[in-house]
Amino acid sequence: MPTFFADLHMHSTASDGSDPPRALPQLARAAGLHAIALTDHDTAAGLHECADACRKHKITFVPGIELSADPAAVRPDRQPTGTLHLLGYFIAPDSPALSEAELHLREARKTRNQRVVERLRELGVNVTYEQVVEQAGGDIIGRPHIARVLINKGYVRTTHEAFDRYLGQRGAAYVQRDRLSPAQAIELIHRAGGIAVLAHPIQLRLDEPDQLDHAVAKLVDLGLDGLEVRHSDHDGSAIRRYQNMAERRNLLITGGSDYHGPQKPVQIASQGLDRAAFERLCASAERR
Ligand SMILES: [Zn+2]
Ligand SMILES: [Zn+2]
Image (cartoon, rainbow, N blue to C red; front, side):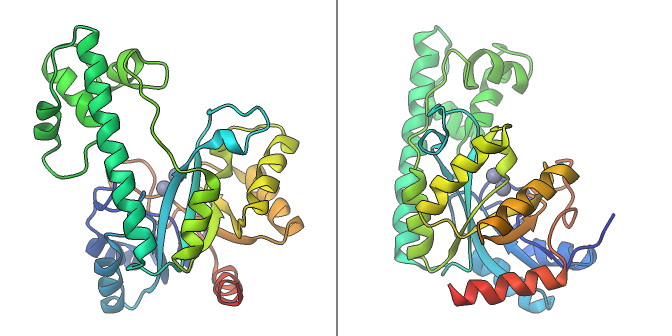
């Protein structure tokens, strides 16, 4: 396995990762990294803590975020399928634009969870929102917690079954999340002083090269700055494809593992950038 200088994609307990932000730099150090970015979903809450720990462990820190946006706006088929995530790098952790958006997204998530519970009740499933809150324990509540309640009450046996029957995109109680448009997500990242990068292009599930090219062209029109060329979901041929696309469109190149904690199969430092690529990224980001 190649050793990388920088892993620019990881999550902490501030979103859906299982390591606290302060624990990541030490893990990074042990894995041979010299630079990391923390890119929690829709929140900058872990950035200060992670930055402090990075200073202690002499790791270069890039403050980041990963925003979910509606893929329909950039897909040639205009369908809401696939996943569109935009990474923001070199953002200001205390940007008022970000805290405003975080508040809005938290509200949207709460409304969505409440509507899922309502649908479940209409389907005759005896759950309450309070039970889901209690199951979650902390302040971040997601569908996995609803799944847990369904398992505890004997409605399903596994999380997989809960998503299959009720909570997944084809499930009976599925509620579409109120998402940012790609334009809003990119603008938000720029307003926070960052550069906007398309995360794991493969997850858009546009397998024909010209389809993905169409989506990337639209994002570039909206101000996209870069492509995440290296990611745990990308094999060698995908990496070459995205590398070419980035060079052709003069986009910045990033890479990272998408580490979520030791209980998930993806290891920290398993993807990333070598030193030269990281330095190129930093220099170009500064110019933008
Ligand atoms: Zn993602
Ligand atoms: Zn991620």
